[in-house]
Length: 181
Image (tube, rainbow, N blue to C red):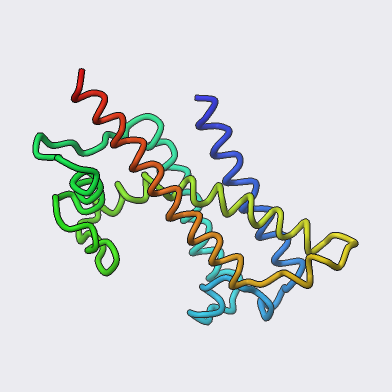
């Protein structure tokens, strides 16, 4: 229960701080780096918040699912990490490289994926955005010289993939130890 509360507090507070700082820094969203603004062109705070707030609440629900209800998909036919990975990614065994160009079609399987990585991805985003805003607001100018939205998004994307891989690898190791016993 403590992990649930702490995780949800971290997600909620860091996202709220990020929204507050963003509004203070660029109330008209002209300097915002969020892909919803830069790629999709959303320039209205009410629309942006109507997308972001449910995502935050959904990630909190996924955190609950991850801690209390989530079960890894396991089959007697799992012979390798690739089998385990694709079974838990797509809901069926297939080739691993399909991950590079395809997503699961079922909503249930997509929710399973969100449960595996979304809470930790938003926790990582909370760390990164908090440190970023601290750097932007610091009296030292060194951060401004290295700050880049592309760098932040690249680090967040790579970090999310690493989290996803580590979670899968740890679960696979647990699966192996259970099958050995």
